[in-house]
Image (tube, rainbow, N blue to C red; front, side):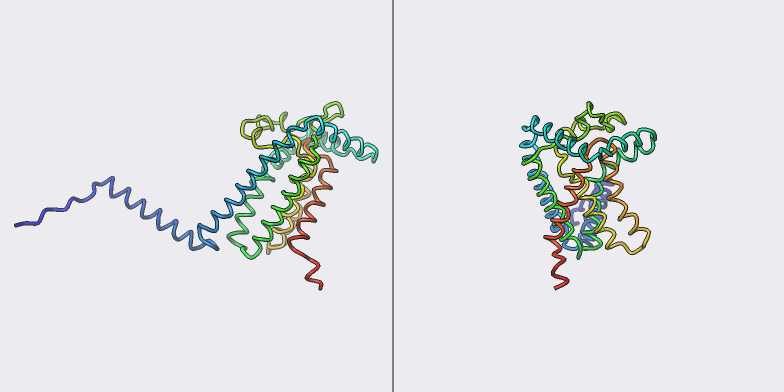
Length: 265
């Protein structure tokens, strides 16, 4: 008696099975290249998404103090006027005279805090893993201090004070602004003091300059914080006092995590 013929998968089924096998092999190979596999990478994403959840809680607390935020913003203006240092107005005028500069400053404001930070964290995690944990922890600590500041002292940014000569460059440049869909949901309108754009840019720039090998790459990363500080002031999103306090926050966080005094001991 002849054995029953086994049915073979049809053409489309064989193609799907082959693609699934290739994808599975690629995922497995990629996981072996990761310092701690896919589980370790997933853990890092969980940490950051958890932090974003905490940020939203802090954002809600800060948003309830609109009147206080406006008073604090006015206090910053008065303080800078007493020092004759309202440089933000001149920077806004400078940007307005160049459509290219306006575009670069606007996109730098949006990209620096999320895309660049996330991209450099992922790059350091994969390519320079020995530097990753102190890099990550410095950013987390700096942002945690910043969140405490937002709740304790919500501060309106310059763009909320048109009577002082400021305006919202981002809203004038294009359709992407703080009132746009997901951005309005996720952003904190009264998170000017301290400037985490300034703090994070400094941490990212110094870490990336440290691990870079080519001098021109080091120079680019060292100039990155300067460009971000210019961008956030010239678009009406931060006062220079916000940036100064942000740099103090970054310095405190880096000192706690890196403990530079131990190297000299």
